[in-house]
Length: 132
Image (cartoon, rainbow, N blue to C red; front, side, top):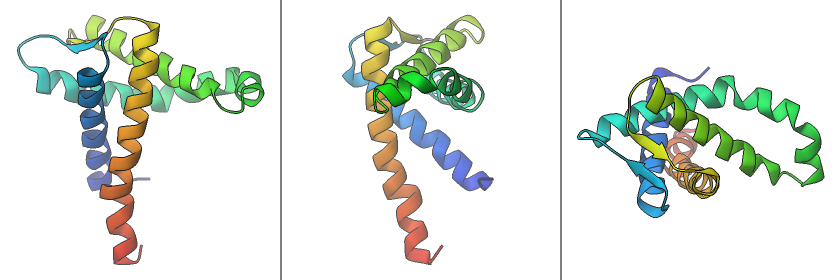
């Protein structure tokens, strides 16, 4: 289990990655007056979707994942991002909008890349220096 500090840092890394996706991908936008709150809530929702729904989708599509040598995971990540956006808009009235499948695909790629590099620098890098 992650320590509370690492959990908060992971949440903030996801929020930064979502901001990058909203900035870089046409079709992903943050609407409303308080964009920071929208992004932070969306990061929390995306984390919950990744913990609760993504494993179920991965098991159901195991054959496709193997057949495509893992590339179908991009589709699963896109569906997770799209679902998290739908939940944010419809359940929490938060203005983080993913306007379709292709913006979800590109957004999930951006979120994955930014999260990976920030995690390497902020989480894994300092831990190696401390001997953990």
